[in-house]
Structures are given as C-alpha cells and as structure tokens.
Image 1 (tube, rainbow, N blue to C red):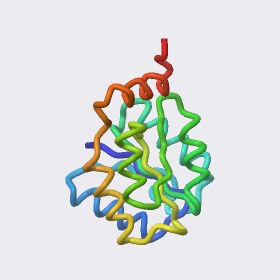
Image 2: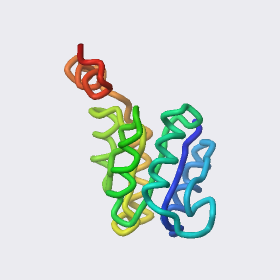
Image 3: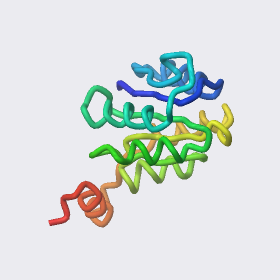
Length: 146
C-alpha cells in the first residue's frame, strides 16, 4: 500500500514510523519536514497529505505535529479525508473500525517509539466495520445520507 507521511518537524518518532512502514512492505511518500529537512507550516503538511489521499496518489496517510491537532484539522478540511488523532492503539483501532479513518495522526510530543508501533499494529489490523449501523454512519460521514 502507498502511504503519504508528513510532519511539520523532523523528529525521531516519525522516522521510526517510516522505517516500520517500509518493513511492513508499504511504499512511503514523504511530505513536509520529512521531505525538505526543514520545519514546514503544519496546515500545508496536513493539506498536502490529505490531498494525496483524497486524490488517490496514496491509499492512506499518516501525519505528525507537536500535538497532532493542527495537522488533523488541516487534513480534515480536504474532501474525503477522515483524519483521526490517535495517541494509543485502542483509539487507532476504533478510528479504523468505527470511523473508516483514512489518515492516522500522531502527536510528536506524546507518542513514543513503542506506542507508535502499537498504534500502527492496531491501525493495520483493523478494518471498517461491517455492522449496518456503522455503515450508515460512514454513509452520513461521506455525505451520502439521502
């Protein structure tokens, strides 16, 4: 799977995630500071990863910023993006299962290397729910509530 990965700052935990993704066999496209090696505005990074996923050049995205909130807000402004800030594995699993999230967001301040690995494991092992109530929520979320 091709995954767009971006961060406004280049920090060690992001590189650990990139290495983990490659070990899992994913193709990674880098954005923001992960590509330019310099601090980038978090809204731009969020939009860029969101547009990569929404436009189909990546199947999923992963974003980082200090709290994770800024890039989440930016990415969620892109049509078709469901970015979820996940600082633990349970939230990551739920975001995929009940929200059909397509962009995983992590805080550079909060998430350690170990927790990042647990989050990735949960994210990739979960899939959108087949429950009819959950499917109805997906339809509403995607603007197909008629």
